[in-house]
Length: 54
Image 1 (cartoon, rainbow, N blue to C red):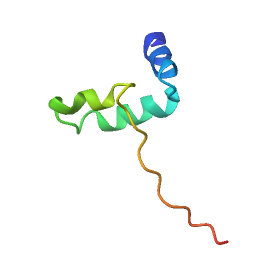
Image 2 (tube, rainbow, N blue to C red; image 1 turned 90 degrees about the vertical axis):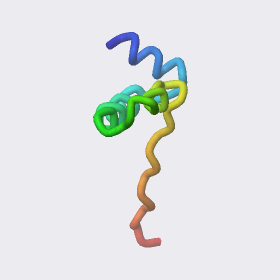
Image 3 (cartoon, one colour; image 1 turned 60 degrees about the vertical axis):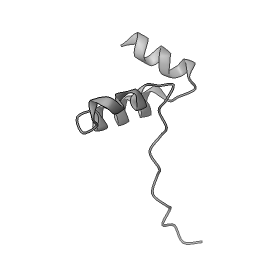
């Protein structure tokens, strides 16, 4: 676990956000695209637009 957290930190990624996203997506992603989930390739999922009124 320490290795995963440190690797994410070394790649300027929030380990908690990265791990949560990876665990949510890993079962549905094809094996040929697993490299997208590695910390150095990972991009955070797009967050939905804010619905706050100005």
